Length: 163
Ligand SMILES: [Zn+2]
Image (tube, rainbow, N blue to C red; front, top):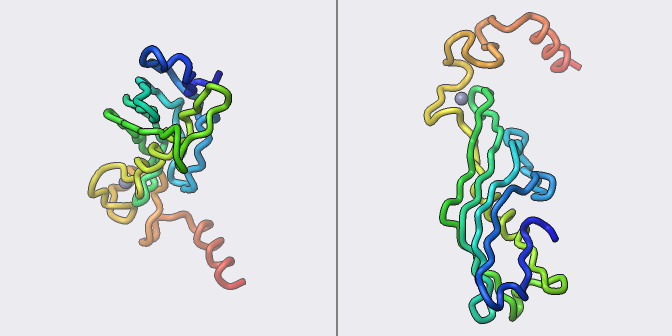
C-alpha cells in the first residue's frame, strides 16, 4: 500500500488518519521551472472521511522547495504550506476516482494542489533589487555590466555573438 492510499473498507466505520512523509520521487512532480527544485519529502497530516459518495480529505501539506531568486540568482528556500487543505473526491459520477480494488490513491490530488501553490517567480525577498544593484560580493554571481565580470566570460559571449 502506498503512503497516500486509503482503503475504502476502513472508511466505512471511521475516519482514516494519514501522517508521514512522501518521497519526492513518489510525488512525481515535474516543476517545469529551472528556478524551482524539490527540496525534501512531502510532509502530510491528513484525515480522510467518507460522506455518502464522496471522500473528504482535510489536513496539512508541507513541501520544501529549493529555488533560485529570479532577480539576483541567489539560492532561496521556499516552503509550500497548505495548512487547511481540503479536497473532495467523488466516488460516483463522471469525475469519479477509480479505486484499485478498495484502495484510493490521493497522490494525484495532492500533487495538483501542491503545484498550484508553487511560487510563480521565486524571490529571495520581496523587492529584491536584483543583480545589477546588489552590493558587491552579495550575489552568488558577482558579475555586472560595468566591467566587474571576468574578461573570459565576455569574450566567450562575444565569440557566440559573432559566430
Ligand atoms: Zn534576490
